[in-house]
Length: 246
Figure 1 (cartoon, rainbow, N blue to C red):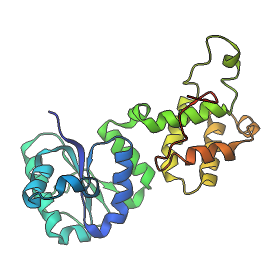
Figure 2 (figure 1 turned 135 degrees about the vertical axis):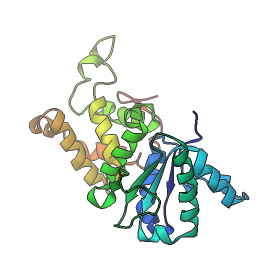
Figure 3 (figure 1 turned 90 degrees about the vertical axis):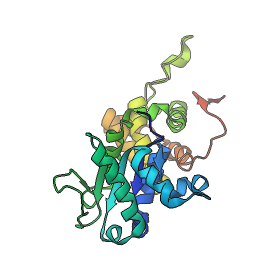
């Protein structure tokens, strides 16, 4: 069955500061997610009671519920939960995916239902599990961001993997750095500064090569600044082609 959304999220407004980074990062990674701030034009003018009942009962493959004391007190979350439970009751496979923010228990959810505890993992770990569940972990290469990071890495060629190919007609394969790029892709949204990103990139190259080889490259500051510019969707003015703009 085809759904409009891969996942919906149900949460109390008081917990938005926890949910929003997760929702926006899922959206950035290509997940079709129903999150109110991403659906404002769609919600405008609609009968929200009826529309949200449809969204949470039939429009998504999964529904993530962020359970907290605030969640249990809200009229809208009770409405969303009731709609999600109606869908869950009608199908044999999992639909409701609960994530605990505290020790609150949701009436009507089986105590045997598997859940995640956000207090026991960081945002990166939580995102990875959600992406694995949705089957999105291997879709990084389908994103524009992955190709932009690849362009920057290939242009800088930190481990000199591509230098030999520049001297022959065939040219080097463009995917030499893909395993490292996938990890850089993951740490980019979590880095708080270009300097922190640079430290993470050095660790990644040390992991795949060696600390000695990784530290031979002297331009991590420049490399990290260029990748940092991609963090908020900014462009470098065109993709690189081993150092030449195209």
